Image 1 (cartoon, helix red, strand yellow):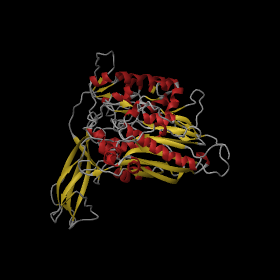
Image 2 (cartoon, helix red, strand yellow):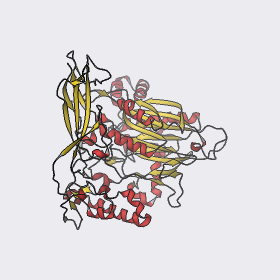
Image 3 (cartoon, helix red, strand yellow):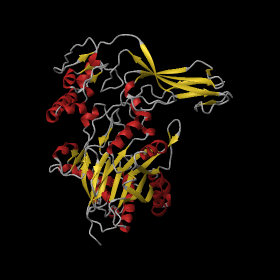
Image 4 (tube, helix red, strand yellow):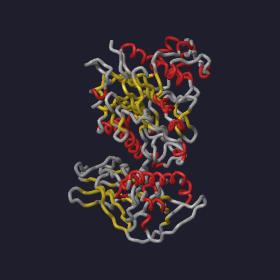
Length: 593
């Protein structure tokens, strides 16, 4: 007989749009134990499993806190109700509302200005108050005054009894919808005798916490660099590129094998789970509608099972290079790597180059390191980092150079995607890896007149030797990073140079007054691209060859204050500890040869 031994969910907090997959442990009729499903279409020894999902529909719906979505709301801002801007109006406690008041107050001003400028239709953008089962419509409302000023708050008085169960699913998995918000879900798993359709034992069940809405961060805007005169090659609303332009995203998505509660204890466990983060990351990445995606820390099994098939649905072709050494996660071995995606209607793949810094390290050790130091050198240099270089060809005139190429000439583009070693003590290794990558790119540049992009997580702050090498083409012999060179691989320092005319895309933001406050004036780089509890700084860059490409628009940067409301990244709103960088480029006309 088939029997269910155990049923549980990895996370008991369900989120709208995030698939729930219960773990079900079975004992087969032959006595073997398995977590595999046994559907009605493929019974085993005359038995199969039946699954049912139910929503417990209470008499009163439960609103949830917009700041802490795993908590039920007890307050609603009366100012939001009057302004008909309830989308961010719920809070779980007076302290929660008080802490977020400064940010919340700006929503009132924004909504008021929008309505004044654009009329009542603007209500749709900010959300309108519809009553029904929301907290604001319950009986027993009262006003509370908080210590930090006069803030209008509505308090709900909950009560009542009676529950109704609605069947919402008949498969092992279930994806909560907006109708489930504020309600408990129940999963039932029953072993069935296929000969008569009857259950052979009572159903095994589990109850979830109340379903919460997926947190929705304020969308980041594309900022045209010709902002003052209103000219740009990008339609900011549709993210569609004008002729002769294309967009590139660089994003370290935080591999699941590193996303542990030990590392990110400030992030709620449900927001750190891969089931939640993968949907949130996908929603964010797809929303940028970039023509080229350079992703780092893409876990190998998640590339195969999630990123590649899901992004393929959105028109992307994938190229992937994983690290060669696996890491034990506690339950299985896994590794991560760099994944480059491009829109199949915009580009075709001409060639790819896979860079394994381990192979370069072995070659260097064989040719340049004394025999007595080889073991020490390999121990220091073998860090398993990789880079992925693709040469793409624009498919049509919309993504080719505008007015600069001879008729019929192919428009090529070289895109490098890398993740440099992270250990801050190994400054020589970081610089050597970057130098190795640049030498490879110089060989490609020598063989073809081709625009280039160098994207990735370089684990190097502005002003460090790797950043200086990339941005200026050489490293000063007295740079402090060069002191760390126990193997002598950085000498002579005159070799630390390259001829590629690289510039950092985000340095262009220094031309816009509104963006300067999020830039470091000493380096002309963002104040940060990585924000954790213990670190705030820039590690990610998009470099481009300035003789062949020009920056048209950039994705606006985030400010630290908004991120610190959740302590740091990752958070329920942003599912990586890095922020995404996105740039729109225009091909520069090239002289005919």
